[in-house]
Image 1: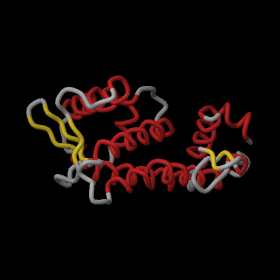
Image 2: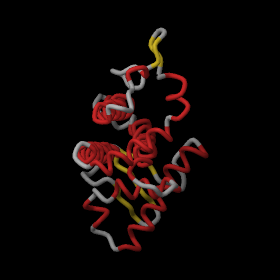
Image 3: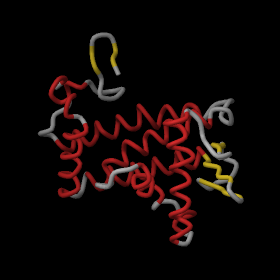
Image 4: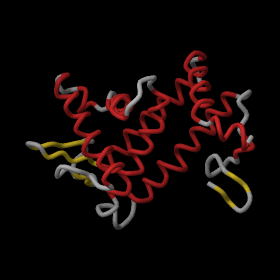
Amino acid sequence: MTFEEEIYFSRNHEWKSIDLNKPLELVAKFDDRVRTIYLDQASMLLNNDNSFYNSFSAGVILFSAIEWVGGFLTKHNGFKNKLDEFLKYSNDYTALELNEREQLSKKITECFRNGIIHNGRVKDACQFDYNFDEKVFASKEDFLIVNTKPLHDLVVTVLNHYIEILNKDELILQQFLDRFKTEFDVELKRLV
């Protein structure tokens, strides 16, 4: 993201302000990046007169946030593993039997994430919807609906918890720093 001649890490912080020697400051800037680039944008889509029609666009942004933040939450590759880290915070998901949870996260990955990335659409008659219920997802037969308003709330909850842990746990903070260095290797060499 650039504004005039500056290159920004988030809406409020330039890349040149990133200092790996100040890890808690970096955590705050990471938090700002996720909120300003992903969550605030999804929130704008979900909190206006066209919220129902914006559910797809908001869903795309939220799945991007899950993809990116999830890379910090798990060492395992693949979107499904990242998604599972988020779904652990959903009571509706954890109330399911293990095999049902596995099938659900596979279906979300295939129909939503892979459909959006590979086909530019949600596949297999699945869809995003907006706050039709307070649940993150609903399914009937083979149809699956992901509810973007509760999905947004879930991403916020997971992010809040992760930031809280980063501010308290030195080991998790070091893992975050290692992942950050790997994730932004090129940017750190060129922009800081």
